[in-house]
Image 1 (cartoon, helix red, strand yellow):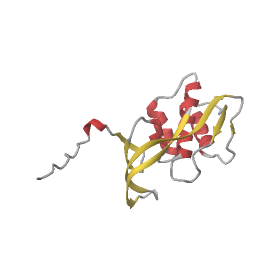
Image 2 (cartoon, rainbow, N blue to C red):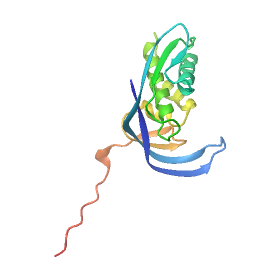
Image 3 (cartoon, rainbow, N blue to C red):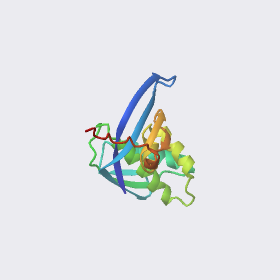
Image 4 (cartoon, helix red, strand yellow):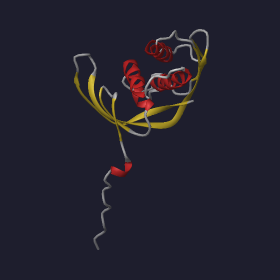
Length: 161
């Protein structure tokens, strides 16, 4: 599965919250740059291809906890998104692992529960579970789809002769 990077088309940072995070308003947009993630059932949780990973391991462990099972997956990461670049590579990888791991479950967890698991992993992770550009508020995990058809176009200026 391709785990796409994202950019913030706009970002407004507000006051610090009681939990230490800041209130934000941002527009998330995926870009073509992507890591490749594969997840398959295995006797134990193993991560291959990117030894520094922490979020995919945390995502699959949290998914197993939510599903009430032991974490038993082999995840392979082909890393192409630069680490610590602000492009959301780790968050995207975690979301892809959640989706792929959930698909292997005999009783997959509901999308709302998957979103909650993603929210606990990081503010960007829920964005990668949704399609299209999103308005992110709160910590960034409260999402609202942006529909291009509803965006009002500014009329072109006409030339005065």
